[in-house]
Image (cartoon, rainbow, N blue to C red; front, side, top):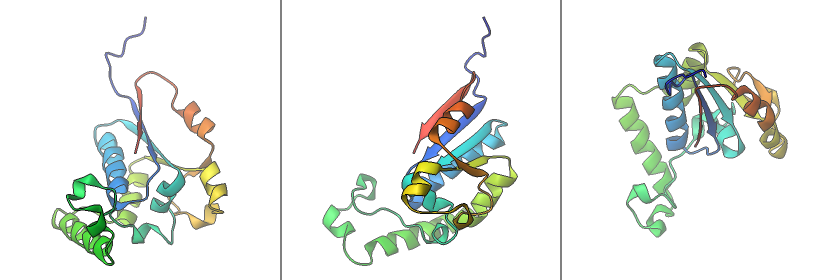
Length: 160
């Protein structure tokens, strides 16, 4: 029997949300894997595609409604300008710790060897074309293709 003693060899990260906090969580996890010498692949589906869409990736927002971690009443989070304010504050705090913006982070991930995949079903559903996506995206694949790439020992999958 071949034992790998629980060693993580590859991280497969599925990003389904396009909020700034979810995109950064996925990017940090993929980048952290690469820094530890672990392979990483990302699969962008549904609203997660906004993180790699050329016209949308620099306009992501923090979710203020339905986010209990915001510690504000839902009604307050829905007020005009509240989402923009929360987004501005989060971006300022990230700048203070030298966190790259979404575009630069995408390029860092690609350069470090993270494979970036767009979901074919979501692409079709939103009528996106490969040309709409950032050049760092390696291709458009089906969920079945992503699962095939997830086979093997020491592979972990995260859904964000």
